Image (cartoon, rainbow, N blue to C red; front, side):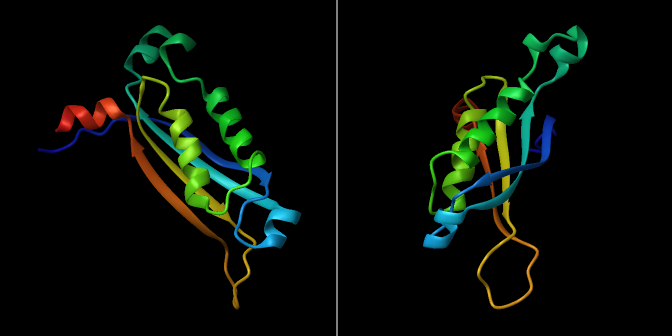
Length: 131
């Protein structure tokens, strides 16, 4: 069975300052994190109605990502990404949430653009309907 491609809401290149990491210096000094978010949802209703009530509130997603990154420190980026995905999946219109977090300043012995994580989470209803 081929999965139909869903519509997507994209928030890319969000930059926030946070204090996440396992090393004491990361948690004391903090650093910038870059976040990309893709939300799968059906945008047919909002495309036809031109009404904010028929779509996902982009600003709410942006603010949630900002609050997570700038808020309570976590040791792992996996946990930070999970918090953002969990917020997005509270909206019943969101079928799945993909979150990428990039951490450009890491203590490694070589040149690197960034380290990061990508996670994809599906809404419970989406999982239940495939079983």
